[in-house]
Image 1 (spheres, rainbow, N blue to C red):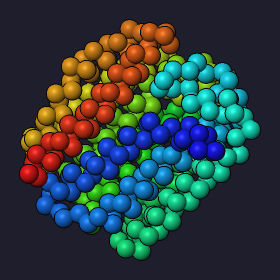
Image 2 (image 1 turned 180 degrees about the horizontal axis):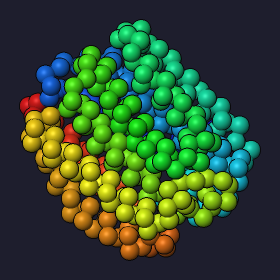
Image 3 (image 1 turned 120 degrees about the horizontal axis):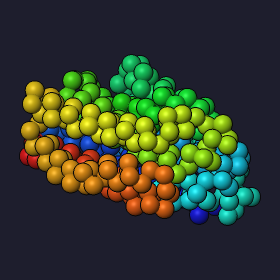
Image 4 (image 1 turned 45 degrees about the vertical axis):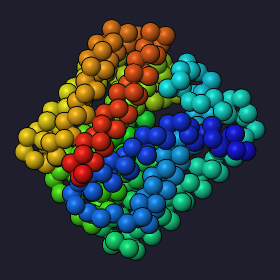
Length: 297
């Protein structure tokens, strides 16, 4: 059972969630807020449970639809293969998805009781995205493009800042939008190898609807918008100046964007760039955290 749970939760991908929570913590500290331990623990548990839940629902529904048998497997896309190897564990995967979603709801209700009902504006959309992403959102190209970013940026990161600070300012929104653009690009690129298989089960992701060439342009534009917004936020003092150290990761981006465009049609050739995309996003967020801690210190 533990092997099944760890597989469908995709534990190795939960580092992104931890970085989003740490980013919210660092931003709050840099703003002069003294973050209490209990809210930090509750927010971390909710965030990890939310990510594990959406992963488990994705594994279960992709197994049931037969998609997992069609997608080319890479270390970064195509599912974990857990249920293909152990199809009798599918019910465990679904149960785990519901349990973790229940944990998200209970934790969210606790935070609402502590910080007020407006937090429902973040909690309710989050629950909807968790359950509907695989079954419904993947059939709506634009929503499918932005939903992952909204989940990690405008809901998880922004929500954590709201809990830690008790309010939101324009710097928090700018930071959350940068995270949203980065994470949307993470999922967008991971859809490239799956496009042919996704089409067979009725999905309508951007690489299917626009084609991989135009989707590669969207990929580049989203990163350009994220970098531009970050620089503007520093220039107008929405974000502390030390966060500019995140731009030390730009050499990776300079290699990543043309690499994606030039190898968009080959799963084998694209796979290293899927990994490079993961490295870039993690490094960028980690350097943002470091810059905010520097500003606080």
